[in-house]
Amino acid sequence: MDSGKRSISDKSMDELIEQAGKTAPVALRKVEQPPIPEGHLQTCLFKSHEIRQILHDDEWWYSVVDIVGVLSQSQNPSRYWSELRKKLVEESGNSELFDNIEQLKMPGKDGKMYPTDCANAETIFRIVQSVPSPRAEPFKKWLAKTAYERILEMQNPEIAVKRAIASYELQGRNNEWIRRRIETIISRNELTAEWKSRGVKEGVEYAVLTDEISSGTFGVTTREHKEHKRLDKRHSLRDHMTGLELVLTMLGEEATKEIAVNTDAQGFYKNRMAARSGGKIAGETRKQIEEKSGKKVLSSNNFLNSEDEPRQISG
Image 1 (cartoon, rainbow, N blue to C red):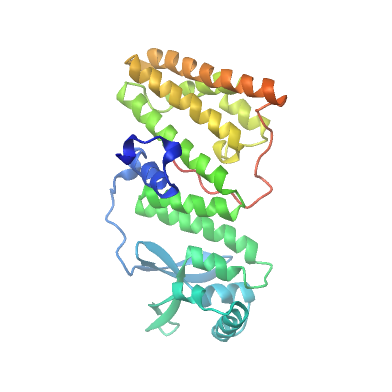
Image 2 (cartoon, one colour):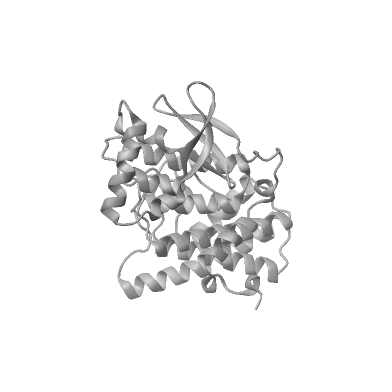
């Protein structure tokens, strides 16, 4: 069966990531600037400390010595890294971690190029866990954001989704929540694509239709929902929804899309009617859940006490 025809719930996480990338707005999928070439070198800053990075296999790889130097504040970061490597191998009994480290040529202080231990963000996260340092947590937050900024440069939505997942995992979100969050990204992307093809204008009209779905689903607008969760303009509402809120959000959007397609809704006002109907369907489901569970679905819970949230991606 064609994977594109299967329901979202039947797809693997890899398939969801691929679909989220493919359904991203066209503006995000167009590479308007020449891609950054393999081997491109640049320096980034963490609290005024320089960290060398190089583009390798379509993602940023970082100098391990630079990072352990910043975290340990050692006068000899190369020796510190050498001793840490030996310690980690002895403690774990294997060198699996170091299979993901490659020696890539980077400039030394004298300007000459030298083979340098480098690792991608995922491996760096694992190394950071092994360095006792008060800078470890701030650094992980910084790295998550820096890695995601690279996605904006490369304009690759599928990798953007993967990086967002890494950030969610860093914050301690469980796999079920992450899956639901990715599903809502797909749902949102597909809905806005329908709106665009049906003559709905981006910006204000999208916002009005989104509020129609939200009001029907939860009884509050998106702004009121954010206020209920004590969020501000910097925060993505969906990144702070509970799993059940995400499911109902997707139900409202999927119902809206199906109604718009089956009634061939054209223009803002017809699609507004579809959005109201879609929200009402999700709202009725919410009320049934509340009646049977005896508990309100609309939650004030958020993730503000965990790691810095990833930057918002489409959906």
